[in-house]
Image (cartoon, rainbow, N blue to C red):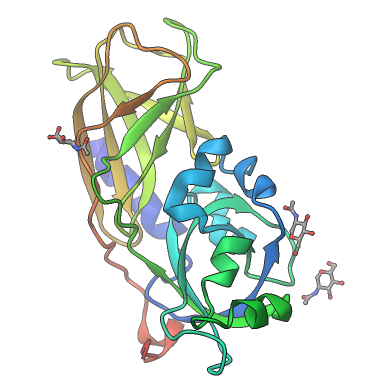
Length: 262
Ligand SMILES: *[C@@H]1O[C@H](CO)[C@@H](O)[C@H](O)[C@H]1NC(C)=O
Ligand SMILES: *[C@@H]1O[C@H](CO)[C@@H](O)[C@H](O)[C@H]1NC(C)=O
Ligand SMILES: *[C@@H]1O[C@H](CO)[C@@H](O)[C@H](O)[C@H]1NC(C)=O
């Protein structure tokens, strides 16, 4: 494992670009329905509609990051103090929007929830809002990280899963699967969005381990028993763990300055 992890973390370092603790200035628009967000590039499907009280966002390519950004949470607030609340809203990224005119396209529920009480209509009337936003922790109360087995899975030849309800402020950058009690880990590859797969499927029951990071440091998250031997496509299994870390970052003050979210 020594060689593998050393190689791996070097790779991660060289692929870091954005700086999570920065406050970004940008624009957000909204979808009049949540449908585009639930059929989105991350692959969550209709499940996404239940995430974060329906406060969903389709991020620009720089936030979607080829799927690594899926499941990340962002605090977003619009800038007109007479109609926008200071706290703004918190959304979870469930989709990609390639439009280069906005940083996010939000569900209307998310867009509306940037408003001061009673000013929801005024905020909706903006259509496109000037905002500032930053990455924040995802917090799932009474909800562990979970593994959903995709319909394309076929025991024993192919396993595709997505990780749901990912807490904390880190990225899932690697995932392995093994039979419970074994140390014979097989890696999963990111197929697209939040979906990972492998054609080397150990016999069950199965456990997982993930590498989470968002910067120069990585951490293993071990879910010691997740899928039963007779795992079923379409089912969601509790991973029995949750992520609550905030990634350490190697970004310099020049990257984002000394801004403070006041
Ligand atoms: C991107 O967002 C715009 C609204 O700003 C919408 O018209 C367009 O359909 C979206 N594209 C995708 C691929 O979701
Ligand atoms: C968005 O992209 C189009 C086509 O590449 C370009 O013409 C346009 O100027 C861009 N808009 C912004 C705001 O960067
Ligand atoms: C999360 O996992 C822990 C450890 O397995 C378990 O005790 C707990 O009941 C789970 N929480 C929920 C909400 O399922």
